[in-house]
Image 1: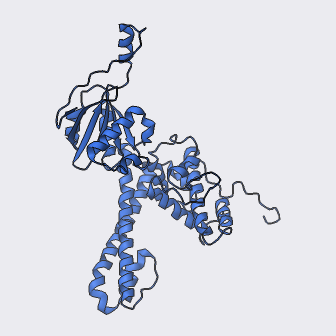
Image 2: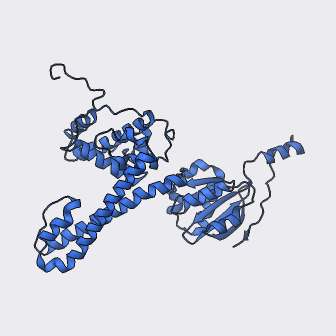
Image 3: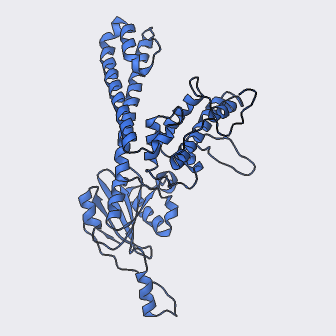
Length: 384
């Protein structure tokens, strides 16, 4: 085995075993028909990436390290014959996979949730991870559970939604901290909406705690203004760049934020899923399954996929089932589920409504139809 920390050792095409009947010309045709000349496992970290190169027979040919920079990766992989490269999904995998695909290589982005043999390896280290990625890519890409990264434009547009979520979560943490500090001193702040919390908290804040809490309340006011600005930017982007979200927003309780997030998370590709039902499973709203023999326990949702879209769909479902929700077939179905079962029936109903809501949003996105709230409900003529 040869180790190289820089440069690249040119790979020779492996000889193809054609048996005793084959000829030289037949062997040359088979070698030229190979879609790639080597398999590379790339274990990416923040500063550097370890790689392991296998030849077409699965033997380790080269191992080394390359800096996690565009220039370094270009020097390492540009101008080489087509290579199959496998790397795990992570912070840098999106731009690295786009760069390597631009250089003409076959790129496989592995789903780390399904690679327990890497995460639970007793001898886990960067070179071993790169070696295992290369071997799995050599045996069969389906073993890596490949995922599809979004385009650069979609990723940049989605950054606006994710930045808003950071501001919202930060504001929520500060609000909870202020309430906790006040409670620990024997006082209590009045209940209020988050948008008006800072103003009401200033009026009800005990004088002895004002030096500590007033700076935090000013931060909450600033974050509230920024969240409102984010909401305007999201609505403007949805109207100008993604007008197909208007059909999704005809659902009472679904706004520009949720509609735009759905389109962006699915990479603005309406044909990505053959069935709309698969979208609910994709974002983790499907119950887990662990059947064994005659046992089939009831488990929670898988929580796979994008957590932001799952959280927004759940919030929309809570609104639909809440006191301000509009009467619809979806609301009636959810309320009927909430009446059945024990104390967790309401929670299960919210998850079920969120799953159906995502399916409905995807169907409206494809068909561009206007939402009909009572579709499929047989009305009583006397009641009408």
